[in-house]
Image 1: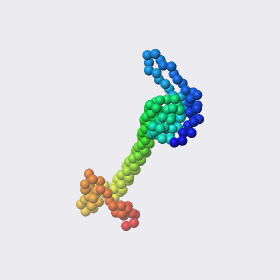
Image 2: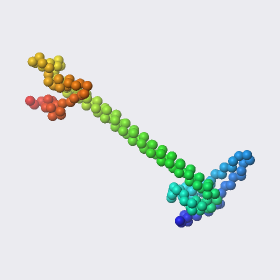
Image 3: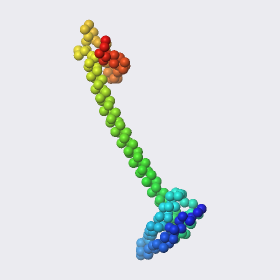
Image 4: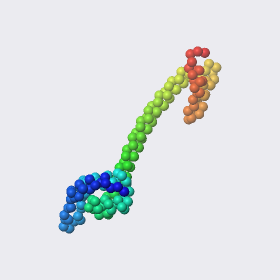
Length: 166
């Protein structure tokens, strides 16, 4: 594996290494320098999995233990996974909002169509529901039959009824 692309960052890292003095009675925490983080990020961008050869090489060049490099990679993979999940969640939320907007639009359209259907029925049906012969209108019966299941006239029949020509 060719590690030449990291040499510039490694030289900068070795110059800028910050070795904190241990605090008495407290665990020593050591922050990575910007150059170390840059090198690790560059390496992570190339491959999310850390092979032992690469881990040893990075550890020696950065002045860290192989375990520190491995832990950094493990933490970075966890952050990467969290970022991916958050991105996926946001995109699903946007799709959901779009679907809800479309649903509301379709509900309004259904309401308008129901209103138009009611107006068309009112124009076709006599107000009393009884025709000239004293019997119920067949069209009224067609609509009253099974009112719990809304039935509709076939489109051709409705347009024929609405047509101004006999």
